[in-house]
Length: 143
Image (cartoon, rainbow, N blue to C red; front, top):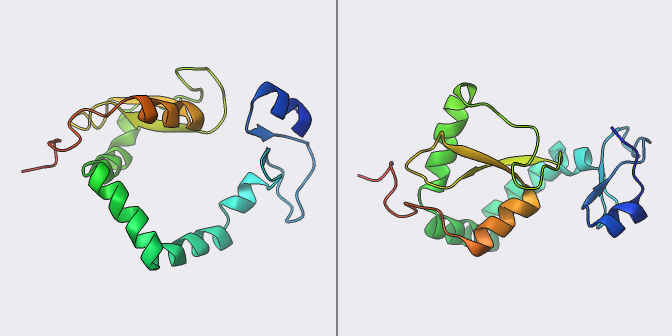
């Protein structure tokens, strides 16, 4: 992995940087520009446990319910995709900006759960700000 300093990442508009040094928990991983936290620490068991507890709170339930109302077939589409992802070619780079940061699977049409575009998180968020997935309400999973 290429070493890039936090200042350089900020100037380039990248949300991660890599120092080549271990974090205080021993991870050799990229760090977030916003707070300097190690990415592996963020997804560690502590964070997963915190998120699990948050989802049990009233506020966490409201956030999840709002997302489920906005995209009722998204959860089923993600589950279907995860069960069949061996049949899909998984990309390492964002198909839009070609960055090699964490790439997410994106569905343009929930009726076609294996028809996936791979986008980095900023491009994925940008797509959802400016577009609406097809068949959001009447997808393949509704009867």
